[in-house]
Length: 454
Image (cartoon, rainbow, N blue to C red; front, side, top):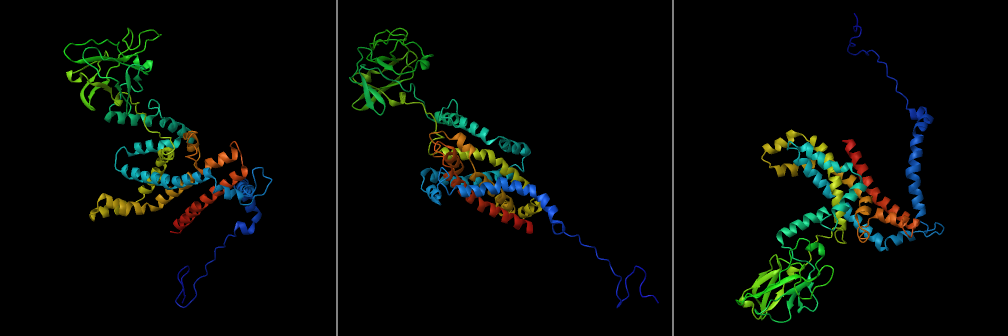
């Protein structure tokens, strides 16, 4: 009786058929180490020439003086933390590392979540991501123009001045002032007043100068006012200047321009008793109460036009440059977060909504925790990026405030290749910058390894 059919299972208690073992392939590294070395050698040579050698040489060079002949040990590193420019750069780098990646990541998360439910979300993402296609140099030039102080050139101040002038009335003739020896003197606070009281018997003319000719191009000719004879006080406010010379001082001459829209106040015993505004011909008329009063021209007639905010001034230059960086890199954060958001299980979100969670709770308790690995990738990548920021600061910050916007990469360039080039101190800054980047890189590598083990 056969114990087992051919190819079938063996009978209980009897050994089964032998299965041949698959031979293991020997590792190429073990059997042919020279072959592996040949493949790795070009990469190792490039890595050594482009990464290892510069790092080692920078550390070595940082131990010597500017000429490279005198050994100073850690003297260059001590100078880093005593030099005002480098300390400002370190402080600004800290601001960059905290603010820029956080704002970019937060905006990227908001954009990615909000555009997921709109029909034109893809077009919106394309527009937000488009600045990434622009080089840092081009973006710096763009924002240097955006932050121009002149509202006629700078977009930021054009918008700001437009908003300001909407709620605040502009002055009639900024920069105008009384003609010397005209009987008008300063009254404090930028206003002017007549030295003596006026009456209704004659015109109370108020000659002014200091208005640029181009501002008078559309102004009407001034008209000499005459007494009305009813007790009212009249007069003319005009530009007492005749083009080409000539004319009589303190008198309205032919061809001289009227100053329309100027407020004239009649003041008695420190109180305003009447007010009038000049017409297109520069003539004003005050009621009889103004007889015997001094005339005052308020400062609101002459205040300089609002010129906006000094975006590139010492206090705002760093936030302004960070804003330009956010404009460029928020799209990068949005695209990565949107890719992670596409992988979030929809049934998980729907289950939370069925259980009564509102949209904010779903976002805070489910979306953000699930996207935490992606948010960490974006945040760490941007932190490494801003530690090396150079282009935007160098292009946008004017020479007068460049020291206030200084960062380590810019300080490295100025120290190594500036007027008083010191390659020893520059190498020390490079080593410091490397030491600041390395912990962030180590954190990122460890996080990636943890992700791969899952």
